[in-house]
Every structure is written in C-alpha cells, then in structure tokens.
Image (cartoon, rainbow, N blue to C red; front, side):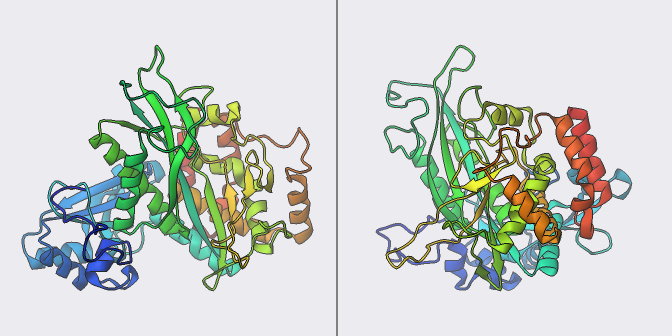
Amino acid sequence: MSASIPPATTIDSPQAGVLPASRLERLIGKSSRDWDVDDLVAVFVGEGLRLVHLMHVGGDGWLKTLDFVPRDHVHLRDVLTSGERADGSSLFGMLGVSVTASDVVVRPRPSSAFLDPFASAPALALLCDHVGRDGKPLPESPDTIVARAQARLLAETGIELHALGEVEYFLGKRPDESDIYGATERGYHASSPFVFGEALRRQALLHLAEMGVPVKYGHSEVGYIQPDEGDNRIWEQHEVELALQPLPQAADAVVLTQWVLRNLAHRAGLRCSFDPVLRQGHAGSGMHFHLSPVAGGTPLAVGAGNDGLGDEASWVVSGLATLAGALMAFGNRTPNSFVRLSQAREAPNRVTWGRYNRKALIRLPIVARGADNRAVSAETVEFRLPDGSAHPHLLLAGIAQATVLGRSMPTEARARLIERTSAAGAAADAVGVPRSFADVTEALSRARAALEAGDVFLPRVMDRVIDGLSRQA
C-alpha cells in the first residue's frame, strides 16, 4: 500500500481484528450498500484525500480511469453525484457506439468506493456505470448488459445467479541464486520458499479486502516454467478465488483483482500474465466461474452431494451445454485460448458435465461441510471453459441468458440433453468445443436469438462482436 494512504489495521494495532474487512466500511461505520455522497464527502475531507478516480470497464474488458483533483466542496460533490462526460466511441466502438453519437456520461456508484492503494497521493476511487444522452443506462456498456441480463433472469425464472471467478495468473521473474526450489508442475498449494510469489499474492488478498472485494482464498497453482532459450524468466502460477456475488459485482471483482495483481507485480519488478498458455505443453490459466442459483437471497441446492441435479441447476447445465461455443466469444478471446483447450491439461475440450470431473466442461465440485454436515459455502455449478482472456461482464451476461434458455426447454428435452452430455456416459464422439475463431463465429451466429432475447445483447452489439471475430478468423 502506498505510504500516502494510512495503513490497514495490523495485528498489533489497538483495532486489530475489527471487521468488516473493507477499510471504508470501518471508517464510515455502515455497510457499503447504504453509503451515499454525504458519507463519501465526509471521508474525503476527514481523511485528507486529494484525488478522485472514476474507474469503469470499457468494451475491451479493461479498467479505465478518469482523474479529478476537486477544487472545492461543490466540485467534489458534483463529481461524486453526476460524474463526467466521455467519448463513448473510443470506449465502446467495438460494441456498436459510433462517432456520430458518442457522448456518454461516466456516473459513479457510491457503494463501490474504495481507497486506492496504488495512488501517488491519497485518493478515493469509485466504479462507474455509463449513461447515454437520454439519461438511461447506455445499452452497449458491459455493466449495463450484465445488469440487464441479471434482471431478465430474475423476471423470467424467479432466481438470480451469484458467481465467483477463479483468477489464475503467472508471475515471471529472472532467476537468481535463491531460485533453487521450484519444480515443473509441482506448485499446487506450495509454500515459500518453494514459491517466490507468495508474499505478493497475500498482499493482493489484503488490498482486495480493504477495497471491499470479497475473496474466498488464494494459493499457488500447479504451473511452473523454467527459463529456456526463448524466455529467460521463471514463471510460476497462482490463483485468487473470489467470493460469490450477484453477477454485476462478480464481474467487477474479477476486473479489480486483475488490476491489483498487475499493479503489485509492476511495483515488484515482476511480470504478471493471465495468458491462457504461456508455453505450449505447460499448464495454462483458466478463468473458471462458479455459479450459484439463488432465490429470495437463499442459495439453492445444486446436487454436488451426489443428490439428483436440482431443477435450477439443470437450467444452468443445459443452457451452458447449448451455448458453450458461442460464449467463447466472451470467455476465450486470444489465439492461445485454443492452444489451452487443445493440449487438454485439465482443460475441457468436449461438451460434457460431471460431478468432480476436472476435464468436464461443466462440473459440480464438492462442498466442504462441518461436523454437523452443514455446508460452509453454497453448492455451485462450475463452468471451466473460459480463460484469462475473458471479458467477465459480457461472459456472465451470456451465462445468464444461457440459464434462461435452459429454463425454457421442455422438461423432457432438457433431461435428454443432460443425459447425453453426462461425462459418466458421454461417448468419445461428444461434441467438441470450437477450435478456431471461425468456429466461434459460427457458434455465436447460431446463438444470436438466445443472446439477444430480452434486449440484453442488442443486434448492433452482436454485429460488432461477430465482425471482430471474423477479422481474427
């Protein structure tokens, strides 16, 4: 954390152990969902902050920032309340915003505020939505698309989806005399000194907690790559698994996690990569998403305990099995995405689902239970196809649309699909996933009606996505 920001509570601090983890929640004294502009103004003045960062997600899935030095209380309140204009064609041209109608407004969400741990001066950061000239949410914006998908899912099925991303990444460094422990494909849950990235990973967890991003856990992963003639770096793999949240917040959490990891690696003189495959023949980086159907705030049974597949889980499984290839447009966006799938190191390459099977495209992972057999976390459906190139907002919107599609299938047809794609009985000729951008383009073109349903993905957005895929084919 930058020295310009007061440090987080430490073990020997008088406030040690005080929860919640988010520093702003501790300062303001109430849950982030109840924050308003008055709360943020009070923190800005009381903590001696100097900068405001309006952060938002562009059409490319990358985090963008607009910076302010408030001149006075009026200017500060205006920025926090209304945001500021921006060029929508530069942000969302690839999703259909043209230069002839490009003005948009970047409008902050008070509940998303956090103290920027990397700022050069004490700073308040907020995530933002995008608003068009009509004052309504910009239909091409990724945050609008995922929010619209979640709203449609609830309206048509009576459930929400909560999701968490498994953010896998590689850290690269030039070797020195201390690097004597690492071993190829033996890094899973390794502890220092057998991994060099442990301290950075733990610092990332602390930053995320202080920012209000809920995390499940972090650990080192299996991947370890020795230097060779083409690359003189050692690469080792780690993972940060986030906590379940509603789809829009889950997407934001992935983007913020990648931002934190990149910043920490840059400051440490390391390289951070989310590339699906760094070197052929070695473990790649997935971006698995766990999905929990939720009704009335209560997670529903999925069937991970070898019980029958729950109704809502069957909607998710059948929808993902139907639209998996099309969803690669949002979840597998680089040429190396296809390398990861073709070398099949626990990467799914056929449309199957199964309990605990790590080579299945869709998996029902085990859930830890206490002595009283109480599950300590929600049962989930894990979608293992996406990788580190994913655009989480568009991908999770597509997953919501797939769930509605699964719900709309006749019961017998859905049962036949689930039986046909079961990893326990699927034949070797089970449907394969796309192996090229041309294949993904074809799959997305076939799936347009399902993704455009309910005006979630507008036709002009789909036209631009398909056009972009075609240029890569």
